[in-house]
Image 1 (spheres, rainbow, N blue to C red):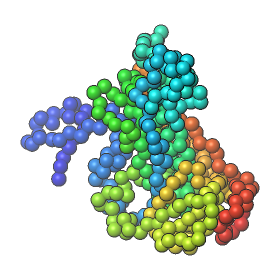
Image 2: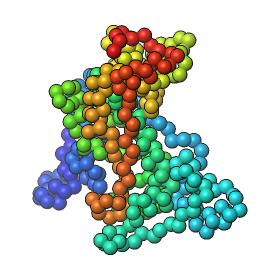
Image 3: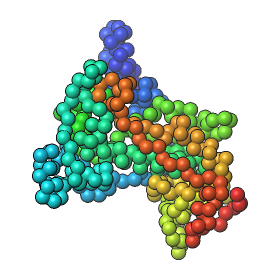
Image 4: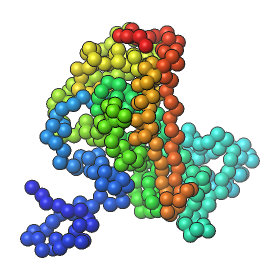
Length: 370
């Protein structure tokens, strides 16, 4: 048994009078208050105060996140302005890492002068978020991937809600560090840091994890969506049933010839009705403790049950489907220091979703029609 205290308590209470040293656990510079700190400890597998059944019971769904595209990674800084001007004049190609999948259209011939950090008229230090994005290929890439992650979360969490399963967040890869101090710009790496890109980042680099509280309770009397940290499915305390009872789900455009054991294949653009028909009550997959989607980015085609689709979207909008990167200037409470991620498009509802299903050559037989 170990007694420990957090950092602030150790400085404000006379712990020096204890008969033995007291270890300190100080989750410093972690956003989200107490909930954010607990979440970081759970992600790291360092929180051991969950109920006894936490790692033994339940039914879960997770997905493999969109991978960072292969090829050259974004450079630490933009191409020097004079070199860019000379290259564009002679019609040369940009150097590796200067322009890529992360770049805005036309970047091959657009030269940017890097702006040094400065104090604005309000005394705030750094650069505006627009300047930060223009000067940082890594931040551009981070924002692009974050937008893709939100689309995957839209579909993955909707599938978990449909199947009445606890959602397990995947671990995402980030391409820019996060800091309340603007020296993280333009390289996306803090001074003296040995951070390599891309890196496995905590969820609060993408979402406001403290705002997710309550999603498990639902809205307007309807059920919510319980959730777990990414390390849950690999935790050493996980029960044998949760480790071994698993179903893989893949999405494809053409009908499969035969399904392998433990594998379910769905049409890309499957609607809620098809997800329930393939994975819901009465199916073999329903008995699996864990359903793992091989991907989740733009895999759903909508909700034929329009009321349910509207509710799920409202639940996710209020609790999950927004986030931001910070900070390019001091005092991030002021506008212009934070980049907000793009909210995913809404999925088709009702007859529009039915039309998506009927337009496909491969459709799953439904248990009921909407």
